[in-house]
Image 1 (cartoon, rainbow, N blue to C red):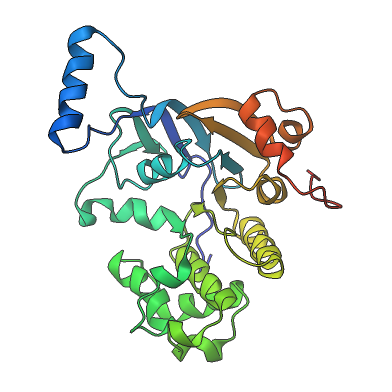
Image 2 (tube, rainbow, N blue to C red):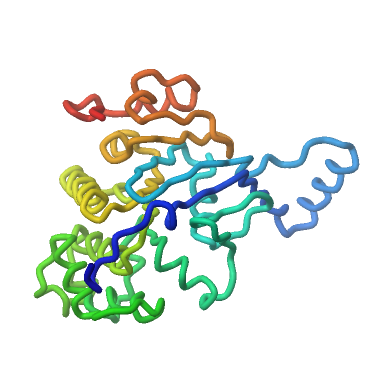
Length: 285
């Protein structure tokens, strides 16, 4: 095994969410607080939680789609999985080690092994840094051992970017190149799990297909676990073996993706499935 690539271990790097419930406090204005107090005093139920008893697991080599319409709880779940927010109840663990928000230094081990692919790579890339610096920065910040120059070179190669792009800045990149740089940053630490947030949202069809193919190739070649958060069931069908459907903060359906699309049971799943373009090969498992 080289410094440039640590293959993930399925037992050590399995990411598990158990009984995740999350409620946001009432808005910080007097009227909202009065309404909340009145509801509590009358015994009426409070506002619905953003997440309600969500449990699922993904290990390296597994691909899981988290799908649902806007407001279903996808973004909140992603923030909890990234240890950016602490759930009201429930636990997140990587292997046998619990995870919760805390000091950056206390979470280095977790950030090395669980990485995020942002929805808008252009906004996530520091404009003053070169591509080389952008990929090297998490290696330095997270104390990743090894030859950082070799790791950067491998990451660029794995996402199909020429070494000559390493000295460019984000403004000199196309949209597709910026997305590949974001992916290179995410895989540089040799994580076991990738959390991808709507990676094909708002891009044209040719770029969308290239991103899907690239993600699929990285998952296969590096043995990564992938959690794909999306409302796009076509992308999920092409990348994920299993899918979890969120509606109202709850898991309403969980099945192999091909079965979920072929025979959706819950109304929320049927609505998402009806929106999938019926393209040749779109629903192959």
